[in-house]
Image 1: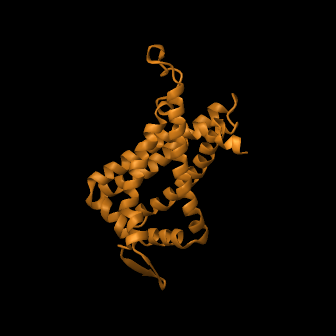
Image 2: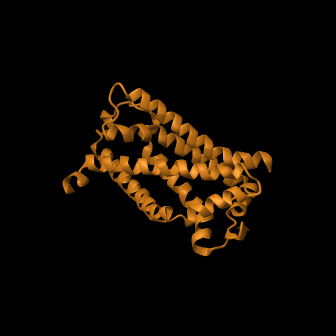
Image 3: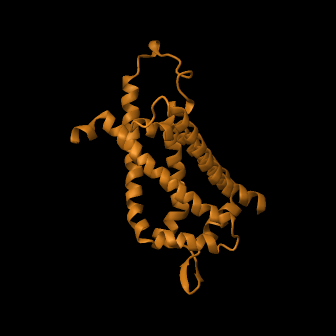
Amino acid sequence: MSSLISSSIGKKLFMSLTGFFLMSFLMVHLALNLLLIFDDTGELFNVGANFMVTNPIIKVIEPILAIGFLLHMVYASYLTIQNMKARPVSYKRVNQSKSSTWASRNMFVLGSLITIFLVLHIMNFYWHIKVTHNVGSVTYNGIEMHDTYTMVASLFKTSLFYCLFYIAGAVFLGIHLTHGFWSAFQTIGWSNDSWRKRIEFVGKAFAFIIAAGFSLIPLYFIIKF
């Protein structure tokens, strides 16, 4: 088992498994964030955010998610360095644009850009909610909770730069997923000749939904407010 984990195949397998886990989180996170545009009073989003914060299952998954993301980045960095070492010298380099997609050749770059976006996203929201508690409160049906909607919506309403930055992050994420989705299935052996095109199609559709869904949120605030 230890030899599998330390091998290149083991690291790619772990990358795939953490990738599946992170993609599941993205779907849940998108579903919650879309509540921002369905109720301008903020009640739907606040109740949803409070459920995520207080749910015992989420409390267990949250640190696992953080560790999974960090390990995903560590293993991605390791595999990128290994691939760079294995490449032929410069005079033997060949044009790979016809045999691979731009996303597949730049997964590490895209992942790094997504990480930068995520860090700033955490600083703007998660840090204030979890650490400084610099957020107001509201009460619905006798239950007091953070007024997360006002904090999030205010930033989208007042900062065009952040809206555009958020959209860019969503686009980078979508491009990253166009290859990552299919690659994860390939690593675990679920992408044979008969299924590859289907998985690639589903991956592109999933990537588009994630990118468009997250982009729709700041666009909503730009257009309406």
